[in-house]
Image 1 (cartoon, rainbow, N blue to C red):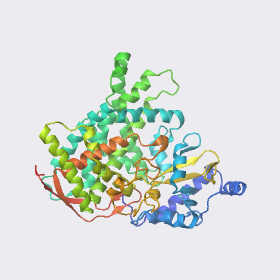
Image 2: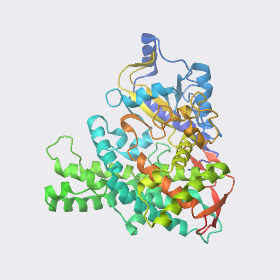
Image 3: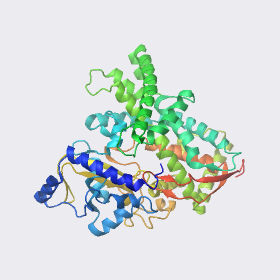
Image 4: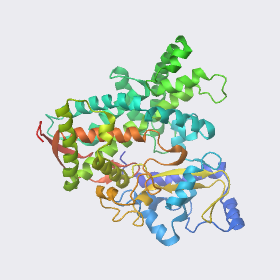
Length: 497
């Protein structure tokens, strides 16, 4: 979302208000100093100006071509882990992959998610972000297991192919199109189908419109008055909740009418099915899921279809446009697969797409350079010492993924888009220096689905069209976007190879 020139005034108001509210509800800065004196091992750093801390520097870096410059400057002064004061609270920032790993893995009993008030307000009490301990593990396992299953991948591959081809076909007569908008059109549909089996309809159109309104409030002033961004987003959430509740209740009635054994032996068709089975089948379990819990989680799981996945696709197109050698090799690899399928007459399966090695390298490099999920916030429930550094009880920790991804110690020439780096010895998508999907117990359960969807899109794009992209710039704050939504002009290549 775009911010106007008056943004700086709003920032001052925001951080001042938030600082005041946090000072009332949490331990004072005096107690923080007391903790520091008691332990004496807090990381080095600066709290900046009174009230606003270093917030303005933090936000200003997000409007540059190198948003990690805020982290890099302080890392050079204080080390890979440092303290600062941003967005109204003292915070410890980690750009150390080893420290990040410990923070991400020690979840529930030591670290819990900690996000701005507007986000907590929008997501509500049943939010994924506010679900911890065994319940969070349970839901994560249920959703993750379903999304990783071969049966689901086989079915969802056909849905993705259908929507991608439909979208690409609509481009033929367009003189100019915006990739960022075009990818959002089908990624949301695909994910909603996976979550609650909703096919194209008036309900789906309504859901998309309301979700667009809802998601605008994820980063906004925490003021809930009529006419404010937060108020509008909360009203949109209410309308979304009402529609999803109607769908879920209808499905629940169907589950209750079916025979228990027959229902539980059947392969679940979507995420609602998975969660409802737990709700209906384990009523004596004190960790069973309430209907409101199911509905809230389904709504939150729609976010990747509106934001992260389409933006990854958009940036892949941009980076490939700027790197002709990578685009040529990617096209050759995908054309080879297309010829094989044409000659054999076989349908594509999900393993075909994920077997395209250079395509996977392009996706890895896109995720590394783009840093769409650039960090996560955690709060320590007790004093924690990691590598000799104290994180005091009640303090927030920001684990910076983007700093790790753009660190010369981890990646040679980190600002260069280089898919070939993933072919080199030592490059691995499983190491601590590559965390585009987070890590630990909150590792994104849909990471394999995201990769599959991006792979299918790139395959059909490069085997259908050639394109010329206009020059466009990436905006990193408050979320990653293209300034002009990446305008391109396409030319059909027909069946040529």
